[in-house]
Image 1 (cartoon, rainbow, N blue to C red):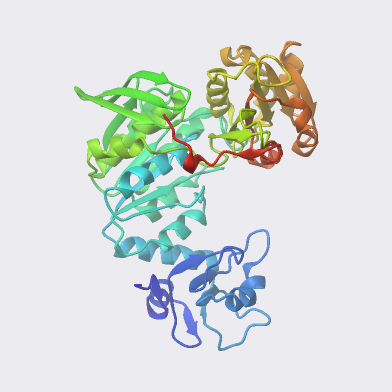
Image 2: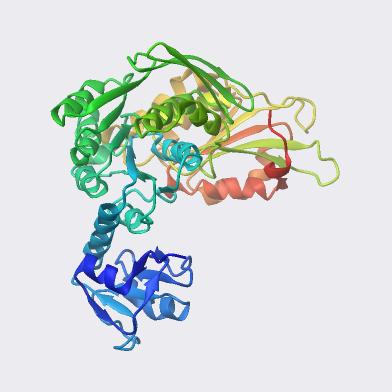
Length: 482
């Protein structure tokens, strides 16, 4: 196996001081819990100083460690690469990795849908070349350079997710990634605590175009209110803009058919019909899929093969993943459906998730309750600024909300929604997810379809885990899907 980094190439990239015997690594890690033998361990300072774990990393088989000093308990002649600043050293590795590859690079940002779009692109491009992508949501000031530093030299397609919490974060990460294609999935109310308004968020999202390679392609959602800001930046950077959406000039969304197990999308690409399927329900996934198709083609991918590949994509845990939970080991027809969307939430993604739940078909006549129900467990949406309470309360007036059966609320902000719900919809309110998870069995029954969604810090994953423990999930690998 070709080394990802040798002692000499890493030293040349960072300008650091190499200690110990010559080494080479096949991966880059920032966490001893997931470190594999042969990785370069990067001692970042986050909640704890990574230097505290260097000795442990070396004991677990790390090839070397990137550090700013020799840590306590580590030999002076241990395999180390010493740099003045570890994060800057990681950025230097990422920059060098980007410079040495001939890969076509796409960067994805957006208030909603960037991770799903990134994963769709991974599914598409992996069938057309050696593809490297961000892991999970590694999209911040250390996630982007880490993704780049892990990129093999022979990569043909690279997918970099770029996020932000505050103004000024996206442009430097874009300049590090130097994408050929930049995608903005949407602009919506998210991280409003750090911005005056959504216009400020649009300006920050448009900054993904600042680092793009000359002659690159800007893939823009034409349906959003602030699309003009994105298009103006594309013009300023002399990029070719490609629009997607209902009102787009290029990838125009047509009819979307949401089925219980899939979403069928009809679109038009400058006069040519485009049909693709996504193996999960949700109109918002249709938009993400259209963005992924546009970006893949801009990278040089084959359209027909891309559509075929996209048909296999499904969301992963916490991002809208659907599961069937068997509640009785003998009477296996006693099941409920779980939609795990617990990883993150803002008003736009919450509305989309509630719309998905409202469109589901519960099973009647198989549980204690004669009629299956559409049940939501909703946690606080964070970082919404001074309008946070009003944005939570506004969920009460969505059309999808009225089509549900029970809504349980978690957290102080969701109390605003809870207080506005009509009595027939109002379930329970708890301060924490732990409290809600404790009484989960009494709140659910066979035949129900259940959604769990909230910001990550609200820990709605505890509710999801409690639901799974009511029975056991069906092995989707052995279950045919229509």
